[in-house]
Amino acid sequence: MSVASIQPTAPEPIIGTAGIPAINLDRVGKNFRLDARREVKAVSDVSMNVGKGAFVAILGPSGCGKSTILRMIASLDEPTKGTLSVLGTTPADCAANHRMGIAFQDHALLPWLTIFDNVALPYRLAHLKADPGRVAQLIDLVGLAGFEKARPKQLSGGMRQRAAIARALLLNPDVLLLDEPFGALDAVTRRQMNVELQRIWSEQRTTTLLVTHSVDEAVFLADRVIVMSGRPGHIIREVAIPFERPRHPDVMRTVEFHHLVNELTEALHPTEGTGAP
Amino acid sequence: MEPEQGVTAEPIDANPLRWLYSIFARFVARFWGVIIILGAWQAWVLISGYNAIVLPPPLSVLHQVATNLGLFAFAGLQTLAVAIIGTVIGMLLGSVAAILAWYSRLFSGLLTPLALIFTAVPAVALVPVIARLLGYDIRTVIAIVAVISFFPSFVFTGSGLRALPPGSADLFRVNGASTWMQLRYLALPAAVPHWMVALRLGAASAVLSAIIAEFAMGTSGLGSVFSEARDSFDMTRALGASLVATIISVIGFLLAISAERIVRDRWD
Image (cartoon, rainbow over the protein chains, first blue to last red):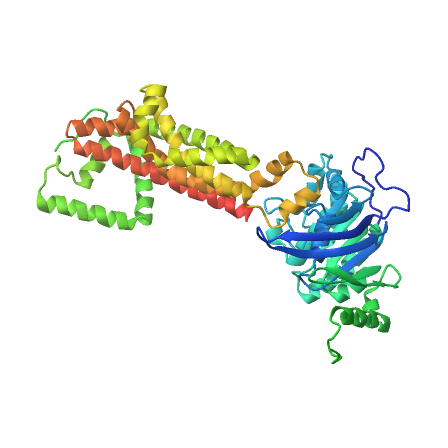
């Protein structure tokens, strides 16, 4: 399906030449103040690039600082150290220009709006005239056709996440940020949503950063997986995922897929099952 | 004891009577505990033989209201109108104050103690002060009702503006929403169910505070009917005014509850 390109009004082209990555982190650190004397290091010395049109997954156990990295990229937190740029500018600039789409573990749908109005919300926030055709197209793309007039409470958890993803894609964002979007779903629904997201992404090819603790999810969806470890959060491994796109769910049954999953699981828990110190 | 024959039997009398009766029937269904107390009261008066100045029986209070419908309806509507206007003004001011406090910490620091002080002062003590400022008429009554409904509106709207769906504040920030957008599309809609709670609380106390002010001023409404009747030892009429006030209060409260239920149904 071709999705009409509706770019938010941008005063000047923010995306520079191919030399500038969509997301760039240079020795980024983040400390959180607990009280007057104590500070906790959430992220330390993280450098990474996400190229334009790439799908990168950050994989790690809970508390490893992966969500903190995503929140800094999303302009929701400020780095304490290092520099961070999105589309060659600051995250705050990107947010103000409506260039980022985001979906969290909380669907963050507004309970008083219909699914249609929830998906159309970014138009309002960006002072853009709503294009009902585009909204309907995205609702169709995420498989929610027929539920436009429903309210969030009438939908299942998986359907709410679909609506949240449709909303994130509405303005054709230059960067799509996904923070455990399927973290609250059951295993079956989660796998199904991964297949759906892969299909949607293969059609849109939006630069995407996914934060997850599921190895399967990261390997199935991403071009590159960055593995993090906690206290303080830092990168321990980067693995390129070679599968062709669009990826068929059968990929998950191949030996190569399992090999990658094992390798990444091993990277996450180095001593597990080996008996090594 | 004979009821006064001031305003009596007009041809349309049967309908309002039936209407009153149906409300009374619903009242019985909901508040049978109250009915038992009334029954005990009636029995007590019959057995003890107290005269009407000491304690009129509830049935003659009902009779008093039924035979003076015009008087009580006029006073009741006056009180109701004052209660509604006062509540609307108080809730608007409370909401605006809550929005200002949401917008800026400076306003919050200024308004919160002021609101607390205002609510801590008894309404009766406010009457002479406000009457001196606004004049000894209905405006003072409206102002008293407004002052009393201001506080719940300020507190509940304030907490409602901050009771956002999980993740929605982050979503708005990443989508580059201005402060105005956050207020218009997130905080204000999120506050609506809380605002309905304030309306319910306001509706319950609005008629009461209107009557207190009317009683103190003695110029209009059920409060002055009560005060005049009491001065002439007509306790039956005084209690009739109380009965009408109670009925109006309960109806207002029930309407506010069902409005709140409808809103909650849509919001949650």
